[in-house]
Amino acid sequence: MRILPLFPRLFTLAPLLLLAIVALPGSAFAQGAVRSVHQEWQIRCDTPPGAQAEQCALMQTVVDETRANVSLTVLVLKTADHKSTMLRVVAPLSVLLPSGLGLKIDNKDVGRAGFVRCLPNGCIAEVIMDDNLIKQMRTGTTATFIIFQTPEEGIGFPLSLKGFGEGFDKLP
Image 1 (cartoon, rainbow, N blue to C red):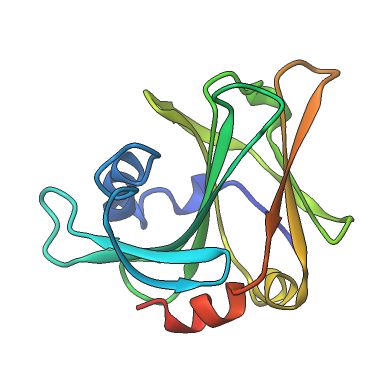
Image 2 (image 1 turned 90 degrees about the vertical axis):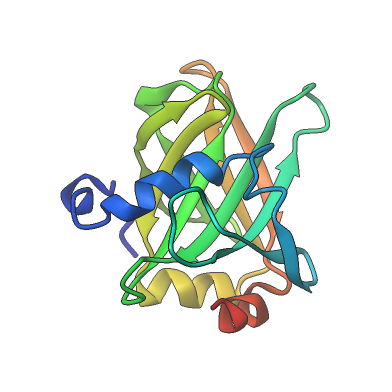
C-alpha cells in the first residue's frame, strides 16, 4: 500500500478542492444530512455552494479525550469522475506539518501522507485510495491516524473500522 500526497493529481481533481472547504468539522457538509449509519461510520450528503449535484462522504470523527478540543475527521469520498476514491483527513490546526500524517491498521504500519493545505478549521491530508488500502480498511478492526504536535510527541487517533465495508459499498 502506498500513501502518496495528492500534488500530482491536484489539477485533475480541482473540483474536489472546493469540497475540502465544506468538508471540515463545523461546516455545512459535516452538518449535512445523515443519509445512513453503518456502525461507527455515517454517510452524510450535502450540496456545496456552486455544485451541480449533491456530494456524499463516508465519515467518522474521533475526539482525543485527554486533550480539550482536539479531534480528527476522516472522510472517504468518490472523485468527481467516480473513477477513484479519496481518503481525506482533517487534523487540528496545531499539527506539525513537516511530520505529516501516519496510518496504522491493526498496529501494522500502512504509510504516511503529507498535509496539502490548512484552512481555518483544520489541516488536510488526502490520498487516492488504492485497492490494497480499501481492502485493509474493510478487513481491519482499528485504523490509527497519527499526527504530531511536536517532533517528539505523536498523537494516535484510533478509529473503529466497524461498518466501514458496508458504508463504503453504499457510498453514492
